[in-house]
Length: 155
Image 1 (cartoon, helix red, strand yellow):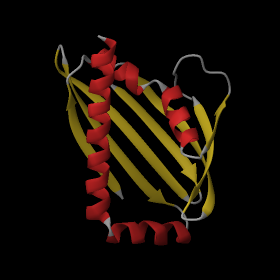
Image 2: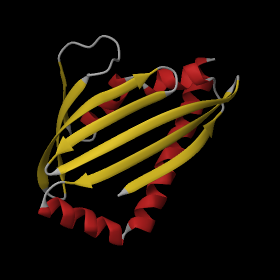
Image 3: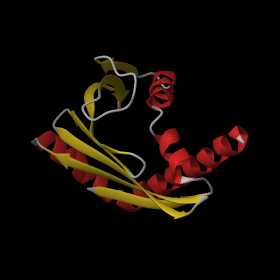
Image 4: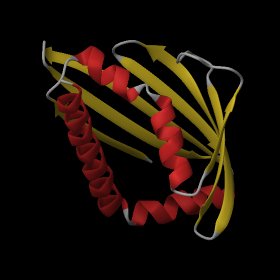
């Protein structure tokens, strides 16, 4: 099952990419929401192969996942792959400079089941696909506005 969205941000592509690749922000956000997040290895700067292990509670059950940065091409693309509980999920972020001060962010999130329980989980999500798609697009739009706010505070 695939979700995708595009948003335009009033900021230069390099600035947007820099904010999107500030992984410590995501780590702290996940920890504030109750997840346990651990970087695997030493990573001072983002690079292909960077990995995180995380555990969190979803639908009353403890889940574990491993997230890997599979592709990292500044300032245009990042691709993550996550494996957990019979699921493979991918997240692709693509940036396109529309002008010197305007950037389009394309976000694609895909879930692929590997086991029967995971297939049942994805099938139940398909029943609510319209609602989930709308929520996904809303979250991407909110994050784009957040990036614009952070850029304006930096100026």
